Image (cartoon, rainbow, N blue to C red; front, side, top):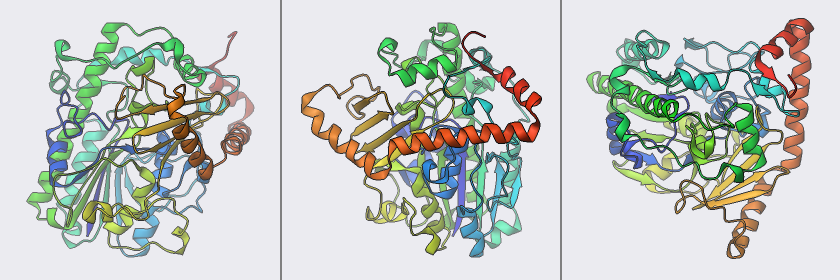
Length: 473
């Protein structure tokens, strides 16, 4: 069987009509969900591009592969689903963003277009204590609005993907195509026809709550991104309209790809998977972009449709993206190897086809160890409850089904202490937060030294000065 993986960047997984967010226009994603199954509570492994994608392709948690931030390469010894498929005769073609950091090989992705590895990566992630501010971060918000982006990389990726699906190679099969898009990543400017789908009088702003009650690590993120002061409502409005417009823009590509599968007679032999690397806060809790442990940042879309998947299914059970490595291997008709015995996830196809949950992790794990936080945070989700462990700064716990905006922290409720203790125990079964936090910081210190040696001390200091600002500067 063929596999078409459609991946976008920075999409809150709740913001689709099929996910219950009626104010967002996603007719093609809604139709895809109607054809198959939507996993309504899917979480990325870390809400930042490089670590999220490294975890995604290896099927392993970021603390296992030591890929902590946007300046962290992961070792070539960790094999990806591309290795597994190509070893078993299924070629993998990728158009668009992959986002690996040098030094590295191709990680099994030999046939790529439009992707470029980061030579050094984001230096800000290497400075966590003392914290730095990201120079010019707040200015990115001002860029949102309507804009002609015709001819952009995403359109080229889409056109190249359609061309592949019309090729003789696609007819012969089996194959895997990873069609990967940059949007709806900030800056939130969208083509006017999609921006205008969201008139001002229909825009709903996310809940902010009392920002004075935010945990220190979330206040760290607001400081880092220069959004400690509230964003002007007019700017916020343009960002919401632009972000939602970009989701609709991406949705149009999904529609074109699905139509091409039908036109070329490939739909019945192709498993389609739609997802994102992480989400976007968009002003919720007074926070922007990703990196936060709240739902807009860590929740991602996941829709699957293809042979033997009953149409119109909805899976409420929390799912982690570490399950997608074995899922892709399974969908391609390939097998895991002895090297994969310790993978933390399992194929989702038995769940999608037969409601069989055997082998799936009992809890979902996500974590963050990059720019804007002096210590790492960890979260586990089981059933309706989500525990956030802010390392060195306490806990929060939310019932994300009853309280989707995460405004009522349950850690102070004596009746919830059993659940708090239980979830904390599950987190510690998976990892030791102190060891992971210490290891991340040690790796980042070593990376600082390595980068300075590679590009020279003067150039390194110049790059730091142009990106990072510290108190007193």
